[in-house]
Image 1 (cartoon, rainbow, N blue to C red):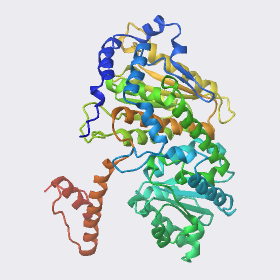
Image 2 (image 1 turned 90 degrees about the horizontal axis):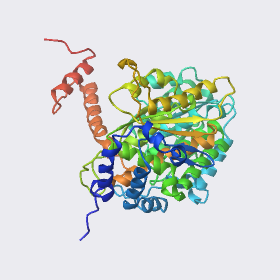
Image 3 (image 1 turned 60 degrees about the vertical axis):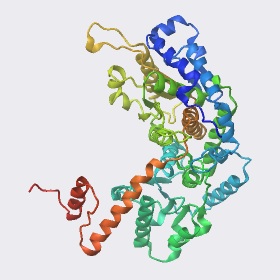
Length: 522
């Protein structure tokens, strides 16, 4: 008989940390810095490409020893090794989890696809000035983060726009001002059945043919697919030679370094710059795989998240990059974290008895400082923060000192606060944060940040004993949506209002929608 796997909250380490947290709740960061003159040295990780300082987290050396002890108890290193070895750790779907192979130069299948992407991007007609990437979720957020971060590295005159929302406004606004003759459309859908993506793809097809004609060669010239559904791609009219696949061991939100990101980004940035993204991600992969737990940036950042969520009760995290180029990183991180770890069932099929996942939000600073920093500094909910800063600016403008002044000041203001006899002006401090400092936002560091985000989420799943690589929670709404589309089509075909089985709230709004007017009082 198979023995039940020990639950996260039944471990010895969990019990120790629960007791220890009662002591740490009484400690202020001011005291922790006064007690330990070497705190900044001892609570930081130095690498050739990233400096991670977590000295402003509400932890002591004892806390970190307990957290790494819990990681050992949970066999964290063994689980990391299993992921890199290609074992079937996505047990609910029976798949390996090998997005790290996408940036491993020794993987032959990956290199074959990369070679095709390189050749295709090098041979794109010179008249193509616009790339429309159509996808949603993991087929969109990661690539858009990279495209936004690396805009200074784009080919001269090249424009990349992402269409994700099935709201037609997205399509209209993203195609505004574009010349279809100068546009390449990249349709990203593994099965070529994703409802939102295929609706937008069909609209793009109609847009192209309306302006350029219905000759099938037009579609072959202006469309490329990232998919594994060859028959459906051909039926759409795309040349299968212009179809780039990926594998079932690449989950959607972990796919930015596959052809999902590789095709549009290579067209936009040039293949050499996309390759540097892969190199940065690979560096972080190797750091994650080989660095000792206490000197491992993804591991320590994830263990700190667990400390905040499960032991201090701080369940929301703000991601605050001091770089306009990282404007889309919080949204990508939000998906990676909340879709990966927003789970209430563990790998053994048991309902969890502790908090998993976290709410992640954020945006580029200093904009964010004038938006929600009031709540972060003086609100009743304590929100741990991650600050990201760069030594060099992407553009040579006299703004960087002002930007980084705030990067340094805000972390201190949160940690230490300032006493004031006027309660409205009192800053309590003791609000935890970590800071990641890098040299410059370039393709390498953009890839490094991408991999950091992926591995940080995976560590939490490994520790909690949940599957960070499936996403069944997105399916029910899709199933119900198919039913609603059928009811709409029935109305359009027959004029019949079919609200059978709908709850009264939905029936009222659905009928109003089909009538084209708001519900009226009788």
